[in-house]
Length: 419
Ligand SMILES: C[S@@+](CC[C@H](N)C(=O)[O-])C[C@H]1O[C@@H](n2cnc3c(N)ncnc32)[C@H](O)[C@@H]1O
Image (tube, rainbow, N blue to C red):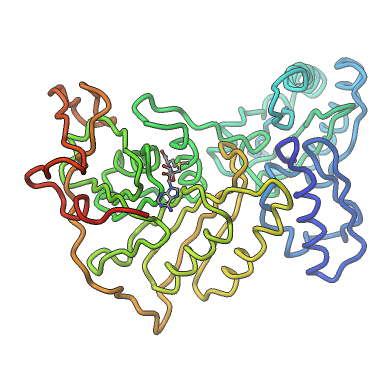
């Protein structure tokens, strides 16, 4: 399954994977929000299909199609089919299962979601009444996701029918129904982009730690920087635009704002390797590749999260050189995914090990001083990130970079300007 509208790139990914395996037998049939892969060999999945594909949200292994005429008529045979598969899978007496009933995400939410909810309730009722032993072992999707094991019955409602499957949680591409990671908004976060970085961090599974060093390229208005700051990281935010992070008075030494070009920015010697490179600039995929190539070759980072804006057409053609390059970098592990909170963009997440012989120390200019950001404050009384006392104090309206320099302002804010 994928977000509706992305089935063609997903089908292309399947075909490209087949070509890499030298297989001609696989066929990828695309519907709205889904791609059916036919002709796979029996047994374990071929290597290029084991990890989730870029545009894949969820997978239904060994799926079966049920036409959807009305909920009652479809839920009866579907419940019987799922019960048979669940009974076979739940051999261990302590094994549990859950139901994921969902519809692929569309830009116009509507009747498919409502149909999925109705079908889900009808299936749970039928399974509980007719197979009480199964009913007793049912848990919520959240409980099975948290346990990290169990069986999952899936019913994905699409135009004209339902794709159904039942299998171990580990055979899915995501622990949550439909691969939806709806992150909780934070009222203090200065932008919607905050949700993207939260989702990426959740997927990576290695939370940023206090005092870790973060370079955030294309940082304004500051959603990504805020996500790292609230975890106690030290952030170097690079953008010519203004940051709108509230409660900065409470973050002395944690944030530096540099008005520089993120594409040519080089971290100073004291900061490499940075613990996190975060980049969310409005740049072409080719420029994003140039950036990540330079940072990896320099040995300047340990982990990276780079948002890549997709071109209007042929997204895979634009993404292929990035994947090809990263596959060839020793010690680099990466994932490229169309996240739930991504729009016409995908997120590249990864880790890097220092490469032998890589020049680890870039030209030394001046140490980055992690002093409070002093750009004009948007709110007179902002509140601080969670876990910190509210600033309470009236915001200082700091001079702009054109006016007289504030005493103690970071030199790099004052002097290093322009893209
Ligand atoms: C989508 S916004 C970033 C949103 C940000 N991640 C957040 O969470 O609030 C893109 C930003 O990239 C910046 N940008 C674009 N090209 C840039 C460049 N070459 N160097 C630095 N910043 C750049 C823009 O000024 C803009 O603020």
